[in-house]
Image: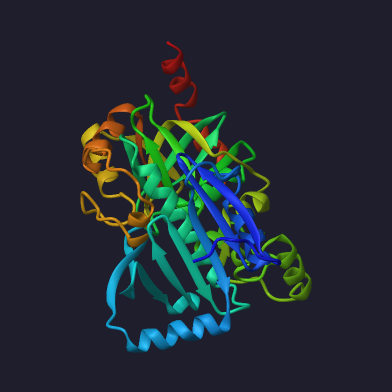
Length: 385
């Protein structure tokens, strides 16, 4: 796969922790969207030595050729993308020195070699942008998690006065609505909406945000009805200029009942800033409590908190989790990482842990009352002492 940039292509190098990824796209709009989606968690920089490489090729003939090859090949399932509680498997086949993965939902193929992925897509499709972002994220995650002491959590997170608060729990436990409540307070910055890396070697642990799609369901939008006003249903797939055009075209349309945003769009919509990392002051475990009127915060024990953390590992709970095909292609060294359960226990011993019961009217008074209950200043004094 040639890496020489041709006319009309865009190239950028992204850094996330120890990972450096050189990205070339034959679709300038896709390149612009990618920069907006990943920023500021992934910074732009120089390629450095031996960067990982990702190339997006938009070509109908190349796509059709791979479709024909797929029809003839003996395909196998490959673990491809880690999501909150699962790892997505896609069909693929081995040819020569590469694995070819078919992604029918994104109308693309991934040609995977060590340190190198080419994405071959139909021209004009916006869905491939998600596949492009996921490949880059898998590369970054592999390099990040090769460091000893790094824990991968299914969690939302925000910062207050430079200290992180993690919201940890399963789907539909209230994490996203609680995050929106905090960001709407004017006191908080967005750190992550669904995935957080935690360096447990630091004390207290330090959280690093990972950009993921933000899915806002009807329950959240009911409490924050201004969020979808004037927006199309899936602005997450659009860069700023495309979104402005869509808003102009749909200004009289009814607000969508379900909204998918990029993390940057969520922060901008709520007038909140963005933080890329911060020391952790507290971990909250949201629980929907319909018999409770408002909300309550209760300290939980180390053992109970450690159990919840172990149940909230990103991807699947198997320990150790096997690598995806893209993580394996990232050529990350084996650092002898401790078991993830051990890292969860370590984190639980460092940080104040709270069960956060969310009642029927938990968001009626905004976030200020419950933010005042968090041990943010106490956490700072412990670190200074």
